[in-house]
Length: 183
Image (cartoon, rainbow, N blue to C red):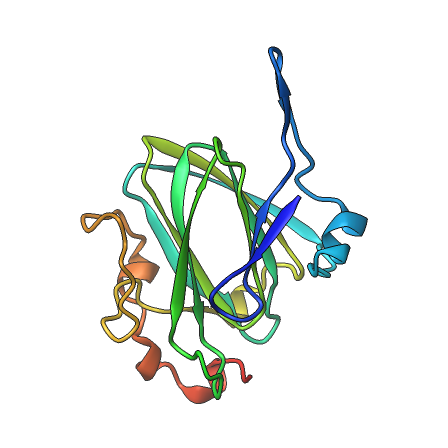
């Protein structure tokens, strides 16, 4: 397993070791011992699965309080995965990082607490799995506008399918300070 530190502090990109032959392949998507040794120490308690079609954009989502670390990977298809630092006082506040995740590259992204997360489906469909360190708490859920010009995410698609919640999410600067985590 190869772990690459992201441009933003705490964001890790994981390239698991893939064992392949004529029959197909095998890889570990999670091993507490191996991932803890690589710096991913989350106590994961919930797994989620999302199926979406091309052009679907989900995000940018977070929870505060009840923040979640997430380990995100793709089982089928391809996505452009994005994390945004939303920790008040952080030197990288409002900065983003994007990574291509696909069933072919087997890459994973570790999204630490204090970051908003979202993705855009660039293949015909995508099946996205992610582990979380806290359960879903709808009363603490927050969203940031996916195309907030001050964040300036360079999404690979412009014509996207959005939920009503994501379409009407506030810009980062309009989120009340108490609704954001601190650094």
